[in-house]
Every structure is written in C-alpha cells, then in structure tokens.
Length: 219
Image (cartoon, rainbow, N blue to C red; front, side, top):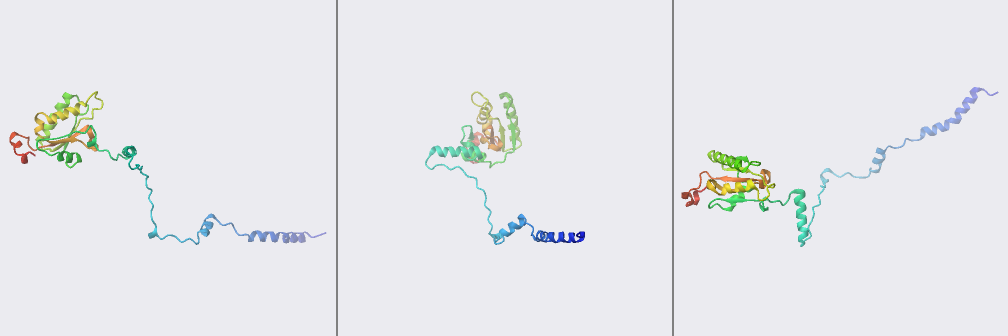
C-alpha cells in the first residue's frame, strides 16, 4: 500500500510545471501603454510652430455677371446677418433741412454725429393728444437749450393709407412756427426706432427775416 505522503509529493510535482508557466506569463499591456508604444517614434510639434486653424463660415458667392444671383446673395446676407440694410435707402425714410442748410447736416444727424439730449414717445396717441404733447415737448426743449431731440411716432403700419402720426410730425416740423427752429430732421437709426422715429436738430434761436438774410448766423 502506498503512503499518502508519497502520493501528495507526486501530485505536487505534476502541477509544478503548469504553475510555473502561469506565473511566467506577462500581463497584457494597457491601452495607454499600447498608445505610447505606437507613438514612441513621433516627434511632438513645438508650441511656437503650432498654428490654429479657424473655422471659416462659407459665405454665399454670387455668380459674376448674373443679376439674379447677386440679388439672391444680397437678400440672404440681409436676412441672416442684417448686412446691406440702409434705412436711408428705404421708402419709409424721411429727412429735411431748414433755410440754407446743406443736406450733409441731415446725413450727419442720421449717422449719429449729434448726441440726442431728450426724447418723447407719441406712439399710440391720438392726433390731438400727440400735437399737444409735441408742442409741450418742443417748447421745453428750446427753453432748456436742447439741440438734438428724438420724436417717436411709430411707423404707422396699421394705418389704412399713409402713417398718421409720422405724417403729422413731418408737417409740424416743416410748417408753422417750428420750421423756424429746425436746422434739420431725419429718420432715426435702427437702434433708436428706425423709420418709426425722427431726429430733430434745433437752432439756438428761431430763424427770422433778419437772419434769413445772413446765412452765417442762422444756426
């Protein structure tokens, strides 16, 4: 009968080669190690040689010599980015100048060369209420020495015919006593109401028969 001790020793000798083989097997490399190994011969770009590449938005291009294509591109740019919109080129734009005042003054007024010192909003008022508010506002403006003011009247898009308040403001500035105070007026820029508002540039003193004969003193 064989001894249990001898059987155990024999069994251990049989398992020893398999255990050694398992212990000798190296662990599998990680993804980081594999990446580093694959990139070991790559030379990094120096920071000073790196160039940033910006993503350029493709702009629509017109087909040269094709008016329809150019008009379509203009319309797309106008809708997407507001490019090419000029208030003074629209039918709703209005401007005017006083006696012996060059048109350049009105263009400068529209461009924003004069700081607006006061404003009134007539939008939504009846013609009678708007006239009363306009007279009070303008009288206070000249009394306080305000030179550039803004009158908001709306575009009158809901009017069945011509815009009511806008037309009245034009008449008030070009007729009656206020025409002697006005140097120039024009539709406002988009930021101030566009064609729904009007800039007015006022004189220090009203125009008289005497000052009409001396253009150098009319401002």
